[in-house]
Image 1 (cartoon, one colour):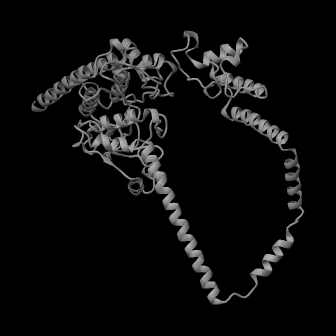
Image 2 (tube, one colour; image 1 turned 90 degrees about the horizontal axis):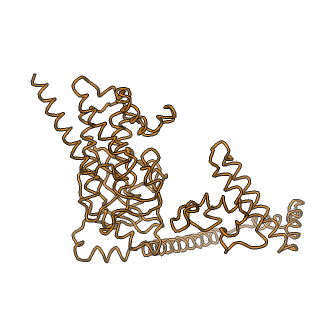
Length: 473
């Protein structure tokens, strides 16, 4: 629909009934006014039929019930049929003589009309070549190869320089040398260094991927200053539980951010994946929760400019060799200007952790991170995934599963049995209550991250003191 209309999927400048592009296009087709929505740059008398067909396919894809939508292979086949038909008519109408000649060439080739030329080549190949001529010929080939290699290197150098300029390299160097940033420990890496460090971007070196797949972000010229500013702000994050941004590479089409290496996997690995056999104790889980909460509170309140992570989840929490948590992957994060408390933004995040208020309104603020953290806390307490289709329909989302269990006084069914004992149930209930507060539907009713961090730290300290008392007898 965006390709056909040239309009955004969600636009608050359109009337209320048409701010969502899906409903806007559906009503236009129903009322026979599709021409009002289609991008005027491509609408002609000759392609109205194709555009109408493509719009019909788009509407079928966005039907409310999943069962009524076509499969992707059916969609691909229909669109390819439209494209091929259009190209075929366009070629044969504009170039009738060339079409006939092309058919003639194919017939001649099939009849073996080039036999004589191959005979001539064979005769030439049988001539006697003297040793000196052979050496000369090989020398020429070597020179040509060297020239081609140098040209290729020059072209690559020019391309890297083009990308560096395009991605704001000059602006970054200027900002780093300016007042207040001259002491910032931030490095600009070359593409050659990046290739060497990653063994030519070998896939075996991929530690993980984001919720939208492998992340990439092309820098638009109009947003270059904003991108450079965000990079510099992220480079100044200095918290023991946040992964440090060491530098960037701007010599590639998509800029690369370089973070410190944290090698003990993710929190998701510990809870659900390859390391899930090594069970975390309640004390460790509470400590990890406190560390994550403290890091997010720092981003919201103590960084030079407030930062909203926007994709808090267990796969974005790295653990070091001491199981210390480090919040990572700031690829989707956004800076909040000092004069604003929220932004209108294209919704990004991961299903299961995504704030429903942000999803429905597009309004982003720090309470969106609070919601996502609440789901992470539920995962820590339960050892279960945020979204699981193996659970019943009403409990496939961990948030709703937790809420119903708390309401019906059966929390013990949800909590990981590995951490429950007769001495820690009070702390578990209190932590579960904090998780429920974080995942309230309305953002205004959720606590601030610094309040969450303080509550969890109090629970953790109380747990340590109780354990020490029990150990002493």
